[in-house]
Length: 363
Image (cartoon, rainbow, N blue to C red; front, side, top):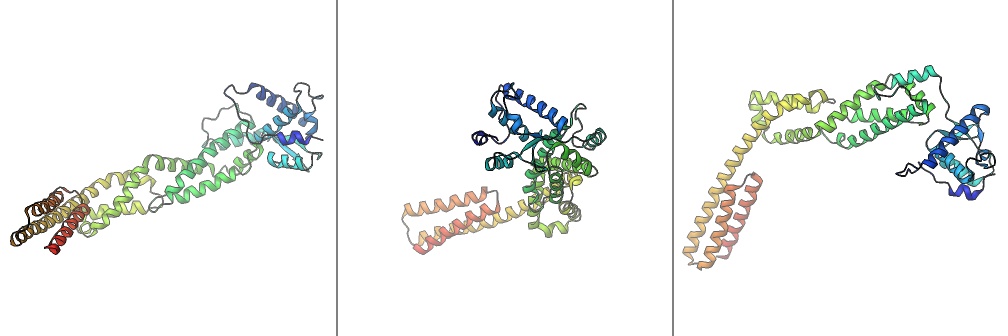
């Protein structure tokens, strides 16, 4: 029976390494794993209570150190807790021990696969890990696969919010890739990882290609695509003139086809070449519209100034009020002449118009 006081002290989760790499604890883990492996190979599942008896294992005299080391090995997926012909994760094992400290719990090492299947699994992950060292054992191999697929999973999850926006591609690829990664990582022990690599080996090359494509797009092309979608919306303001121009209409249709493609990744370079020309045409139209609006507003404010001057003369308005008022509206008129956008011109003109109306009402 394992004392409950020891079970309660068990820390769950991966072992926290110190900057000195905690050599003592690492040595305990190496020693304990070798011991479990030897006993497991000799007689199958190893009873847990036998592994925390300092009389049987004098090299580590503290029973809690032994117990904690076993849980750390389980967290690292080097071993499993085993009871009633089933393995269980560390959290569930601790709960079971707290509820029933004298249960017949054992530990087992990860079940290895034969060398032929292991070689096949190694070949299957070349698209994922092309530089994988050739001397890795099955455990180290599985950790490399798990870590790489985990980083892919994180990357795809970071792309997903962008891909869900209107006009952005790849959401189906991302979701399908995440489903496959979930299946590959359904169980993370080495035996399960190796068999998952074999089961899905025909899909792994496509997964790698999709990840490369999505990574290139969402890390190198995202800024351009954001600008592209925004400008294609802006072009709607001038569609009549774009359609009336044969060459610009052709470019717009080509860009629309790229934007609406479900997988436009190979067409981004073409969009980068076409967009500046249509953008220049659109900007020219906008500049002409802005200048027409500016001229119209300046003409109207000039008339307001002339009208106010006449009214001030008629009503013999006080000089200070007259000068301040005309200065304000002339200043707005000057700002209209310098404004860059139609929105700014319109806002300034509305201010001038409101001021004009207010003055008229006070006279």
